Image (cartoon, rainbow over all chains, first blue to last red; front, side, top):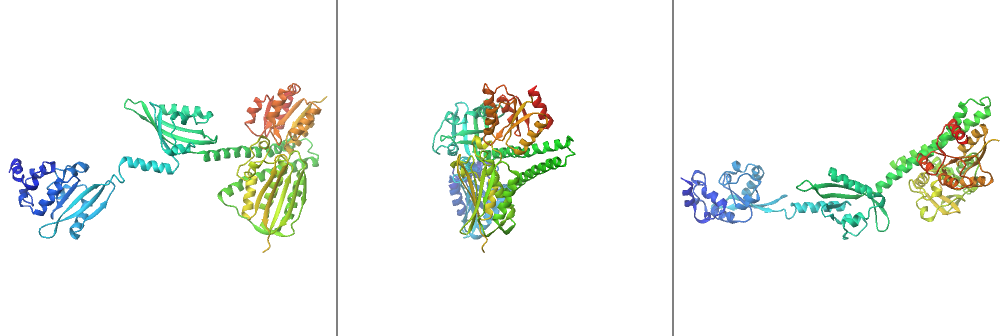
Length: 505
Length: 119
């Protein structure tokens, strides 16, 4: 039997349609299959096919014990990722549906066994499995309807939107610069990074004008470099309208047009101010620490050279004097190095306290006596006033007193006196160390206990010392459930107080 | 008559050792622990050479040097700046200092530099 004959034969009822899949069904010699000629098919199959072939959503039918496959035009166009459809219609699914059949078959079998439909959600399609009951009241086939689910989750614009939301949430501003007309589009986060409202609209020119004047050359050369290499990277400062300065890191990629000319620059910007400040503080710290270590080293080197010269070696007093001085500078360096180590211990949380009850006034007297031996510039006056013991780490608290006394001397070069007093107030012991030095103005007072903090003005900047002493002291006090605070007026002097709970239990 | 050297250094140990070494080399020495003491000394006697630290508790050696080099009374006095802070070398040049010596220094090198300025 020829194809033309088939076409005429089957051009009846449900097979009258002009759609491609109906044409394929008409061209098949059904007498060679287990289903036989279409006019002899059960009414249930004919009805199902008439619905399926005229449906405008992708549908497939698996019929009978061999799972003979049928589908419609919509299935062909929407599921183009499937293999050639002509080969599948009229064939057993196991032979034709090569790619997906192993996944589909168990579901089809389930529907046939239960007679109930299934609804499966997937990334790009939701699948609706329905049972087709034949004239013998048994499930003879399963229809799968493919419902496009991309409007909810899958399409490209949605993916972009989700990416944008994710980058917004992490504080990343995205932007797209049209290099031909010098215009920019961006996400609202970029505006926030620039200190604007999320809804503000700025031109590229206005955004560029926010760059710190000293960093303009950096951003210009980053752009030149991007046009050559295709990649943009720049770390520069932005000045907000309130004059505050913020570090930004921007990374981007050049997009080329069909003539290989750079047409767009796509990129992201993040605020790196905190990292930058930390980095600068660390650099400062290294500079200050190396300066502090070189100072005792300078006198040690001099003492050693004087001994090496061989002069006056027959004078024991001279030799002992030089060696004693050298030793005291070595001790000073040791103290410095220990405070570096303490600092890294604090950062990593490994500070152990050796708690014991002791008389605080005795400890203060020891520190004061030690300073009186080595200090010729200042007199230290101590008025003790605590009759009870406190519980704490004696050497750590000694470190705090030492640090506060050394600061008092350091920051009062023109005065001759430091006053130390102690007293009991309620359940606490309070120690005060008062100098008549340069003082600290109000706005800097709360910051002196921060890591690496040093007063920013010229006078204090040139004073020796490296801002970790007070940071360490504040940490030690905190671990003792004590407190540390400051009273100061510029030009009049500073008083540091610290408090510790008395050991009355 | 021996030459007078004015030393400005806030670190007591370094100040003492420089004073001793210069005296051993037959110099007259005036010492100051800070900018204020230095200005008082300068008011009394002009030295033949100034040896100065940068970080002072009440001032900045670089700024002091600039002032000295701008004043008609003191611009002829050689100034040697000493510092443990490496970038100070560049700023001491800007301040027209005659020489710079970095800490820790060699005592013989220090004496050589001083003698070169006084020659």
